[in-house]
Amino acid sequence: MTAIGKDFLETEVVVGGPLSNHKGVNVPDLVLPIPALTQKDRDDLDFALNMGVDFVALSFVQRPEDVIEARTLTNGRAWIVAKLEKPQAMDNLEEILEVTDAVMVARGDLGVELPPETVPLAQKRITRLARKLGKPVIVATQMLESMITAPTPTRAEASDVATAVFDGADAVMLSAESAAGKYPREAVAIMNRIVERVEADSGWQAMMKAGRLEPEHYVADAIAGAAEHIAGTLGASAIVAYTHAGPTALRVARERPFSPILGVTPTEITARRLTLVWGVQAFVADPSRPVQNTETMVSTAIDVARQSGRTQPGDTIVITAGMPFGVSGSTNTLRVARLPEA
Image 1 (spheres, helix red, strand yellow):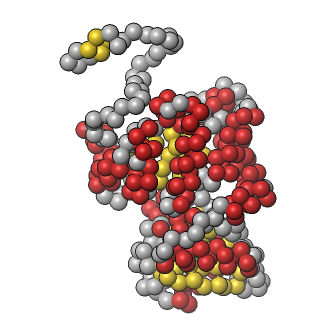
Image 2: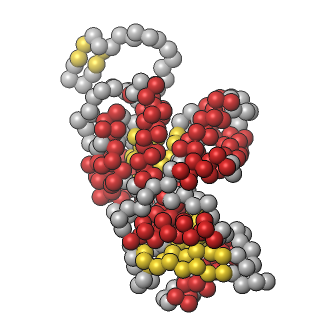
Image 3: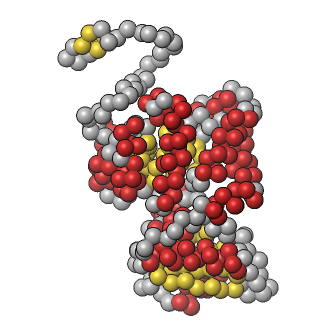
C-alpha cells in the first residue's frame, strides 16, 4: 500500500497477473467492521424471497450475528446457508452453526484467507461439527476445476470429491465447471458417479458406522438414533420420517442410516428444502388424507414407501412421527410396519 485517501487506496503490485472487472478484494487476518448485508443486498434478498427461493447463501459470514441479521430478514421464508470464507468464521464456528440452517465450505475464498495447507483441516472440522449439530454441509469450489476446459477430471479431483463424501458431506457442489465450463453435463454426471460409487463401497459404510455420533439428550434425537439402529437390525428397506418443517428428517439423516430416508411433509416448501439433506427423498402428503391418527400414519407411510421405488412387497419399514400430529418439533413416536405381500 502506497497511499490512503478518504475513499481510495493506492497499491503496488508485488506478484502480477490478469485482473478483470468487478473482482473482490481479500484482506486476510482482518475482521471487517461492516454489516453482513448492504442495502443492495437487502433489496436483492427481498426480491429473491418474493420469487420464492428456497435457500439464501450468505457470503463472508464472520460471526453468528451476521446469520441472525439475515434470518430476521428472511423470517422463515428460506433456509440460510452460511458460506464460511473468513478465518474469523472458524473462530466462531459452533456459534455460527447453531443459528444457521446449513453451511457451505467455500474453499475458494477460504483458501485465499487461510494458508492452503490448513484448508483441508478446516473442511474436515466444519463437516464434522455440522454433522454433530445436524446441519447440512456443502463442500464447494474447484472440485472438478479441470473440467471447465477438459471432458474428464484429474485423478486428484476425483479423489477430492470422494474425500468430501467419506467425510460425511451432505452435498458436493460444482461452480465454474457447470456455470461457465465447456462440459457442464459431463461434470455433473461424473461427480454423481463418484458419489454413488463411494457410498456403495463397504469402506464408506464402515466409516459412517464408526463415526456415528451419540444422540443428543433430546427426545427427537433418541427417536432418530433408535430408528437407525432398528432399521439396521431388521434390514428395513426405508425409514419414513414425518416432518413438518424438516427437523425430524434432519435428525434421522444425522445418524447416516444405510436405509433410505423418506421424508413426508405437508408442504411443498419443506419438501424442496429437504433436497439439500443427505439421504432424504421428500414426499408431500396428500392433503385429502390428513394424518390424524396412528392408523393413517402407518397406511400413508406404506403408500409413500411403495411410491418411492425403494421397497418390495413384504419389506419392513421404520416410521418416525410426532404426536399430536402436525405440530413441529413433537417427534416422539417410533413404529415398525411391514408392507403387504403382493
